[in-house]
Length: 139
Image (cartoon, rainbow, N blue to C red; front, side, top):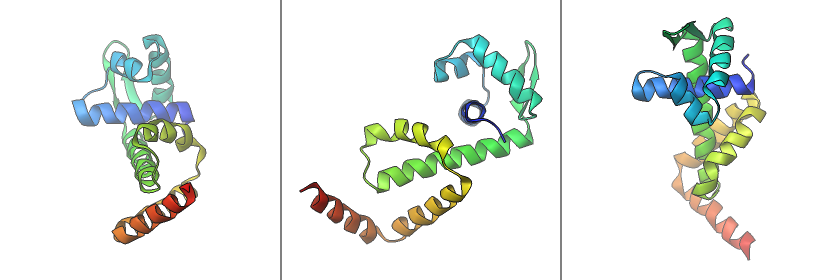
């Protein structure tokens, strides 16, 4: 299993490839606000872990293993964003909150959050009922 830092890189690489068709060291460095040399070191680690194929000076691509992990990580991130929105977290806080918690939850916890998000999305009245409880608690 990749480390939390490796997960961040895989998720960003996956998203860049999905949106732009490619991921460059400079794009990753800019997104993560790190030096390009740090990205190169991590890309080399990800190559050793068989998450991507890296050729010096030529670039890299995700392996099947890397793509599967990337898909799971994006799913986890989006699920946590949905969950936080449903429970009423202010929109401007959601991204940073997700970044802060996503590596600290087991996949069992993620599975249970899937159930909970599905439960709320199946019936909008449930979300409205939650908002009423929240308003009551604010008093």
